Image (cartoon, rainbow, N blue to C red; front, side):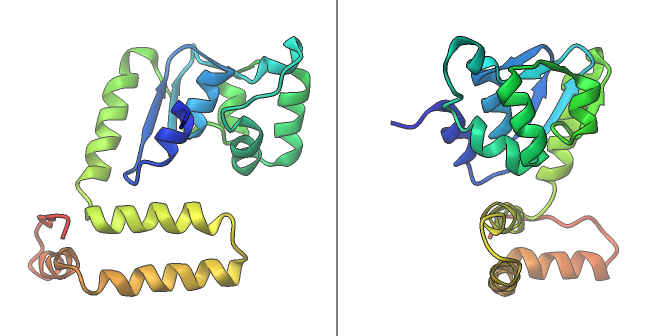
Length: 175
């Protein structure tokens, strides 16, 4: 029985969150399960569960400290404090603040930019970063090298090299 945040986190493709309001409790946990978070100035963030005698249970106690550090994550979770978009940017909870009318178009543009890259390489990058967070540096570097060498066998890598030599955009097929 997978909750929404776990389901999103298990997607092997890059996932971008567009946050335009309150991302509190389970809403923040959904956003934390995404790879990249863009917010409008109207966005607010928090895990208020402790104020009701609960703890976050959609991954908030695990994903938030990995993203923003243990001390700041504990402060937010233990106080049930809500922070604004500017503070979220400052602590690395979101990667960008976008004017509200441009939020969706900026997210779509970012998604198009990412989607234009080699699909197999994108999946390997996401795997290397996510799994590497739980490994020692040495183990993470070994994982990165293994995934890098796996890419040598892909048609997309050959296409990427040809496109670079021919000074044209690559046409990746995900193979």
